[in-house]
Image 1 (tube, rainbow, N blue to C red):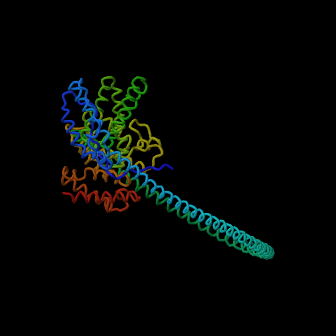
Image 2: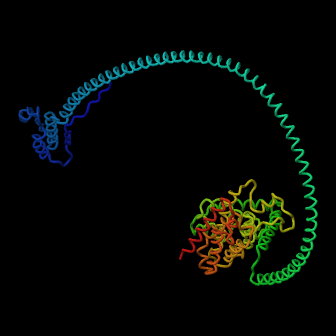
Image 3: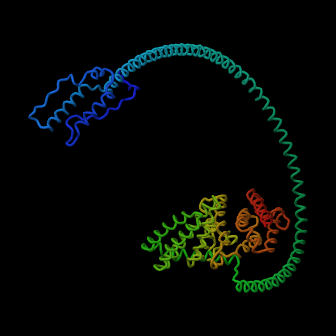
Length: 570
């Protein structure tokens, strides 16, 4: 083991610089001699005192040769003086170093003894610990032996009990078999007697039933003949009354149809002057635009290898740009400009490529609404602003955006019940009609409702977004009023549980703003809607908004709370 000697605590003396040899030219020999003599009392200590007692004059001094010059003589005297001082010098640093080594050796010996004592103590403790562990091991082994012996005794006892139970079970089975044979014989005899008795009772019952059936048949034939006679007379009377009623009804219907045709013609002229459309017109517009898009530009782009390659490149750039949207005005403006700069050059290259890129942009915005806005409704803000920017900057984007909106949400953006026949006259199958209603393959109603909520929240927010120039008529503020009126006036939409879901989203997005825009008329509309969600349409609870399903009832409550919030707002 290596022992390291610690340094002594005594301070280390500082050696003063000494110069040996001849002085430089021009130095004063007398001054050096005097300086050396003056410093010697402070430089020597201890054993150097004996040198101090001697006189410098007692030492033999070489007499200078008379032939030497004065300069040589002085140099010789200086050298002798330097040698004399060197032989008399006692270095205190060497004395300190010697004492430090002695102190370090003493400290090392003490530390070595302490370390050896601690090592012996640790070894003794380790031996004691090892003895305890060995004792514990022996104890554990004894416990294991006792446990194993106890287990063997328990196993022996269990085996004995099992054999005894087996003997008891065998005896029980034997007696059960004997008793079952006896009981079976008794039941066989009893069953034979019961069968004979039942056969006798059945024969008597059949006889009574046959007699009763014969009487009933006679009575039935008599009643049928009477009823046939009365029915014939009644039918003749009803036929006469029906002919008269149909004649009157036909006359009234003709008058009503003429009046309604005149009214519809007047309304159509008024709508044409005001630029208004019906729900059927809006549905036809969306379906026509979608079919023209699929059969025209999309088919052309997909059939042209070069256009398809350019379209795929732009489409792959559009999707991440829309996904990068944050609630930052500068980022929204930057992404909007980048999207416009991506799509505008395609218009110069090919009109079909331009429309295909508009379709991809609309799809990316709607898919972002389905995912992000469904999870967090506050994320609709950036998406709405980008949609408004695109509707303002890109030509024909409004028509394509409306077509894609109705493709993914069905008739709910209008709103309208999807008809059984498409706009081209082809009847929908169950699968194609479900697709036209906005459902994906294998999608449940709950999944569709969640996806629809995100889309409609973005659509309603676009209606209220501030714009520099008017948007397409499908994205203008009056559509908000039209949406509520059409929903309340469409009987087939009222019992649907989706209706209160969409209306609640609309009220949450723009209910308070509509209160300031439409004024008292909005109050009246909300009163009608409140009555529909509380007591039902025309006071009939079975004809309430949302129907009687649990989803419809929950949505009605949310609509009621939204109306109360809007009416209480300033």
